[in-house]
Image (cartoon, rainbow, N blue to C red; front, side, top):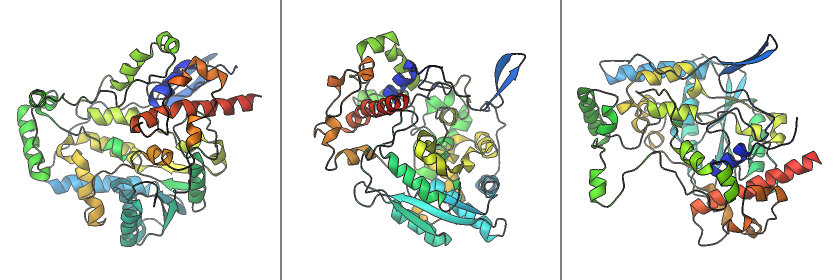
Length: 443
């Protein structure tokens, strides 16, 4: 076995921030591969055999009830079972933000304890930014903790600087404050080795932001579409548009393309590296990727459930292995996945309508009514702090020149650079830090 790097994995990290989007079996090393998700490995007759034991369901019978409450009760029943099965322990810590998903896990767990169906001792931990980054998680998580009478520990993240002190990852990683991750894992593990999360909910309960008649015609009959349109209007005051793009064209705007790249192709990649690995073709391939064959009722759910790599972030860091947490996410339970695939996307998954209705009487109204609120561009806030001028003065290792033209990397601390430039421009530095760590390990 050699230390030869897998150039395609390096390219995917520089292009997309991860090498696992298209091929989850590759690693940064050419001679090392991972077992693909939902697969088994066996040795038989002198041959290594890898077989998948599960695949995403393509067809699930449509669930039809006469009234909304039946859908809501069905979801509550299945979700409660999924949470209960993850409470087979004396103590559990809940990674709880102030959003809809992790608070739903917390509320259901507290309900099970209150009913005597579980004796697990629960503790919430919430990561918060009080000063350096816009963040209202402390407020919303506090409302939930108070209503549920759930003990909560606020882990303050403001004092962690960008990439300082160094904490080398096992693989190249877009982890801007790795020591924060180590300390947060340590804090959580002090309460319990079992961690409850709601990380997968955004992927399981996702929908395209703007449903259109044309996009739905490929999957449903016209009567069903009219019924969905009426439900969207009544529940959300949303009008189902034609989706032809004609109105946007006449207004001088291009129609939103969900397959369009989220940012520009990096200009600092080595041209010979780009040409040799056909990276521009790879770029288009990843952004336009869809499973094939595709679940026709829930194409977005199918794509975003199998696209990410669901291994834990703590696996990136050597320092966390001494207090690794067992991550348990009820939104990854196959029973819940099959239920979601059995219901109509509209209106139940639009703006997480189903889970909001299910949690209406359990969680505080401000949380149930809170729109999806991502953390935002944390790297921007970290770069703008004092003492980050070193970001434009780091020394590339010789191996980096095979992938990157160093003088083409934008000045990260420049006032003119935008969020996109910071986001992609940090990747060469992140790769360089990993290569430095790798060289030190080898030597």
